[in-house]
Length: 134
Image 1 (cartoon, one colour):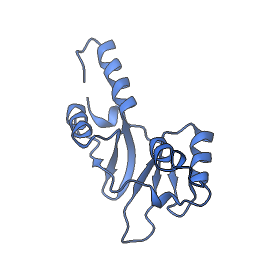
Image 2 (cartoon, rainbow, N blue to C red):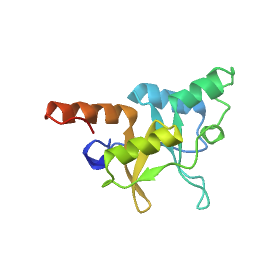
Image 3 (tube, rainbow, N blue to C red):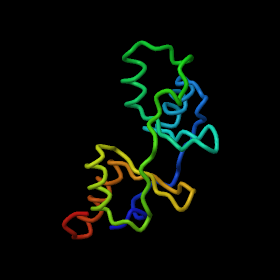
């Protein structure tokens, strides 16, 4: 199974200067687990902010979500993969880097996300079709 068969194509972005409050609002409103953080400048790179980041790096520390900027806790750089990559290789990368998602890129364009939930769903599809796994 290839990445493109299970990737989520809808990607939600947030500006690096946005507050964590704005990020939380967007994530709750759209039921998202992560947002891709846009680069602040040409010299910057994309990042990601997750529910886990917000809870452990801000809420658990009692930080004021309206004063902390997304860029302050975003993880960078992103791990990008090709849409043709086979899923077992992606799973291995996720395990080795201890990450919950990889980003599917074509050149400088981000075209999808593969999260652990997508991998589980893909595994179920393969098994339903009579396969033995991803």
